[in-house]
Length: 289
Image (cartoon, rainbow, N blue to C red; front, side, top):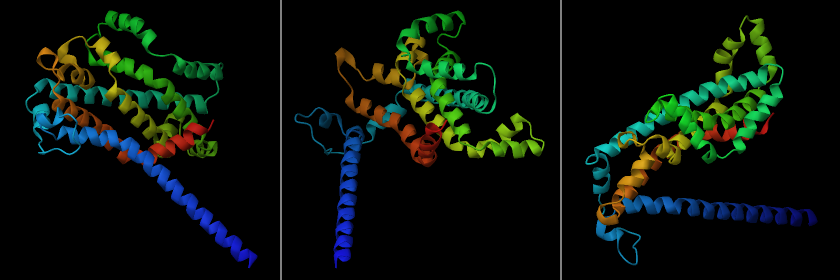
């Protein structure tokens, strides 16, 4: 009887623990999704609903005029969306290539000062980017890359490399060296091992770099504001800031909410498609080495 009582008690305790776990996580999910839901629903409201006091949760009339104005009536916004997409993709490609090569080198090769160089890479993660904007601006200007997407991409890659190199190095460290030795016996050079053998095994780390880099480049505001002084080269976050205001300081709340919703979509879609590999990369590569 005592064993039965203990078993029943353990089952009840595990059930209560499971209920508490799902309840707490459900509350957290609601807390995170509530602001996003407010933005999306507000983007479907007419102007009169957006300025009502007290505010209403549900729109009296659903409309997509805000999205139509964003995509069809505002050519500069369409250009900014495309420009942000190009800059983000170039930043992702450059960061993935450089961080993969650097991570592979730090993981698989022994050279003098290897650990010191890696520590220096990690230390750069502790430097806030705001104090170095001025010297970076001077360098980019002297290179003739101001108001140029290539200059902005180079700056973004510079900011993303420390974390990405750290991630890729630890991802390569999680792969047994016996795989390299077996490939070398088959006549593969280090570069062939990297490009033919490793990609599948380090894909979680690469996906992690892709997701973090794309979100950072897509949403970045301050650096783009400093380096892109020409209105034709404004990225999406800058144009959201400048075009949300109308005459005499009034704010077009419908356009602002539609723009915010549209800005969130690429990040949400990319994360939903790659979340399995992203979580795997964070839990494996980031904890090894």
